[in-house]
Image (tube, rainbow, N blue to C red):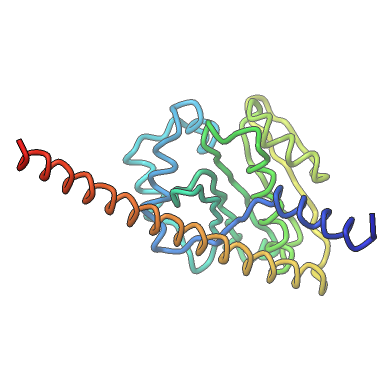
Length: 223
């Protein structure tokens, strides 16, 4: 087997495992709200530190500052958000190089690396934005989140039922900047492909319903 073939196969395997992460905007508020409301009470407790009600989730989504912070999402084929992350940049003048990370994943989509992928994506952007310290506040029982942080090299400090993780980020370089640019482009392309596929599916479903209606009409007229 040639080196070119091996290289091509390697790229293909990486592409098949790749999880596209898209930057969300104001127009995605309804989808963000739907995702968070789909979490059960325990998952809401892990995400927010308290069992947030639907009204509290609406308030959280309404207050999201898309101009200052970065919100990331993973979409399924129905263009529903199945995982999202919030990278909140510090507004304290003394901590301008700090940011906080929070993540949530649909229960049915866990165990597929979505949380780790969102964390990886947020780290790259935070690094390129000059963030030197990434902070994660989580309940001590939120072992998946703390595991992701530890694996990335974060220092985790536990204080009873709560834990704080601190990850020192390296200075941005050409590789990190190019990597983020490629990530954004590929994620946008993936979303457009899913959007076209959904539109085609809807058109096909409509045509099938029309054909079914025509057949039923013919059957009735022949009786």
